[in-house]
Amino acid sequence: MAESAAERTEQATPKRLEEARKKGQVPRSVELSMAAVCIAAAAAIYTLGGGAAAKFAELMRGSLSLRPEQVMSDGVIWPALMDAGMRALLIILPILGATFIAALAAPLAIGGWNFSGEALMPKFSKLNPATGLGRMFSARGSVELGKGIAKVFVVSMIGWVLLKGLTPQMMGLSSEPLHGAIGHSAALAGYALLVLCIGLVAIAAFDVPFQLWQHSRDLKMTREETKEEYKESEGSPETRGRIREAQRALARGRMMQEVPKADVVITNPTHYAVALRYDEARNRAPIVVAKGSDLIAARIREIAAENGVPLVAAPPLARALYRSVELGHEVPAALYVTVAQVLTYVYQLKAAMARGAAPPPPPTIN
Image (cartoon, rainbow, N blue to C red; front, side, top):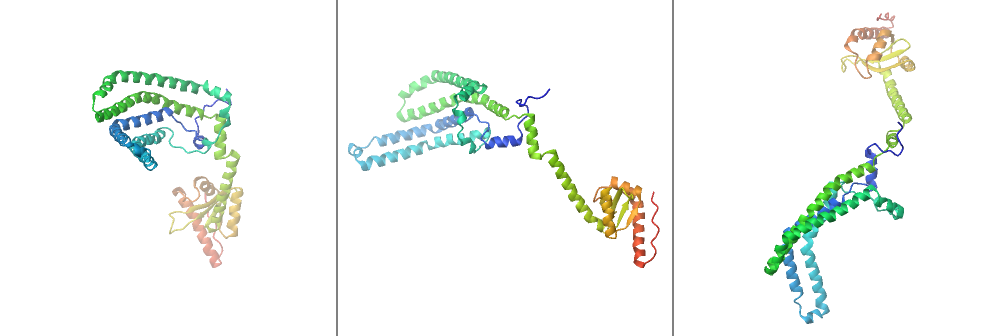
């Protein structure tokens, strides 16, 4: 059955994921960030709230102790307000720092940090009412509505239980000394916020897998898109064929450069040609430095003749070397004796030519 063009069944490729990340399309969970920030704020208030509240009380007492003539003086009231503002900022700075760190750390759990200029570009499609209505009544819109209702319900229930359980302690604050009541109220506020965060954590535990699944589904590709991307990254078959042909041409060029350095070229005599070189000091056996069939074999014979490299017709040996030995590899042990006969003939031939004597008869190789 033919696959529909709109059917997305393939997982996103690394290239697709990278392109989406550049556009700012990474999985994000608002519920996770909200839960992390609330937990950090609640923990900071629970541990530091008592001291911060006491410092605020001292700050308010000092600020309200100005005499009437000082309040009316421009040289006193503005410096006093600036000093009080700075002291208040320093008091709440640890709590603000904890929430700031939590807001930065939460994205690392899902999607990581991502800075994208494309995500900041205005999209006029978002101003289209029809598009907005479509988002509202989509599956994602339904999930967001469900999460909103769940948050209201869960937080309301937890808040009701908290109020019912903490009412005696809150009523008892009025009978405590001022400093003790301030610290106790801050601790109660932090504790209540921590308990409320349990509901947010539960919702975030559902939202994080959903956002990961939604992100993966949105980036899925059709088979045609996958094939097109593969062609773009790897090249079309025609392009790859041309590249392989160019690589083979370069390899042949390097191979032909080795033919003049060969000791002998063994031929079929027309279909195959294999060039051997033997360096007794470096190699245990002769090495195949060039080989080819038909036109390439003819070119090898031509270069060998131009450079005085002996040609020896030994069809069985030429076929065996061509089929069983790769370029740059040594002759196998099974062919040592036969190759040795050829090299012995070559050395005798060179010696005879140096003396001006008649060449020896070529070996008979079966």
